Image 1: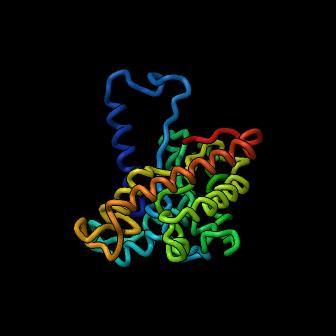
Image 2: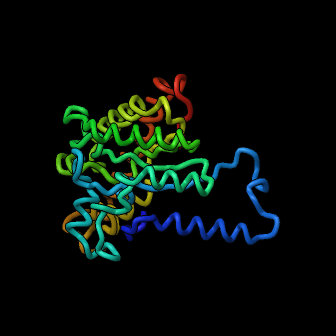
Image 3: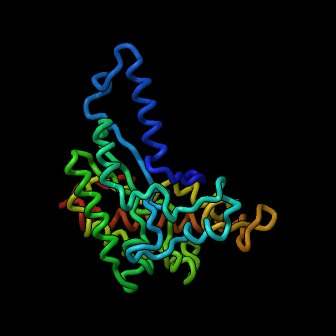
Length: 265
């Protein structure tokens, strides 16, 4: 995850993609036919960096909402994801751009706290969040773009962080299982490609060893953190991520794969 949160109307990605396509066009004889059959051209995003609408339509706060407001000094341009790319409201425009440049797929992450504001099914489901992801998935498919969905891209619901320390506790494993089950059930009829975690090693090390990313924990000798233990916490978090990944994969294989399709990493 980059620490610069772009806020322009068009994402930095699309400018870069147009530049790359231009460079390819300038390369003699190189076009899509030079790639293997079935090669997937796509783009990727993360919920916190792209969606915006951080406090709207029933979304609960995530640890990144808290982190960027509490530690603006740790963000290069002191920005937040409150608005970001405004993808929550402008996704149809961006999907049209994806189609225009010829993408086959789009990888995005689901904001856990947008669909489950308290992080738990018992805390209530946010219907507006579910509606948003349903509309995004349908819009992609209507434009012949395959959705690739990441369940967790570092934005843990703040409620779970406050209650028991999030991924520092084994309690997170059951919460993640329930969250994954909810997403598979809600969106799995149309989503055939899933990722359980984005860069779990970076989430563990940067969030709990250096304190450079949310939730910003580290030892005092390592950086400017209010709490943390850089010698132990990254390993505890990594262990609980592996357990969470395993329980989600087991769940999908046993309950959904026969009906829906593929589970990726």
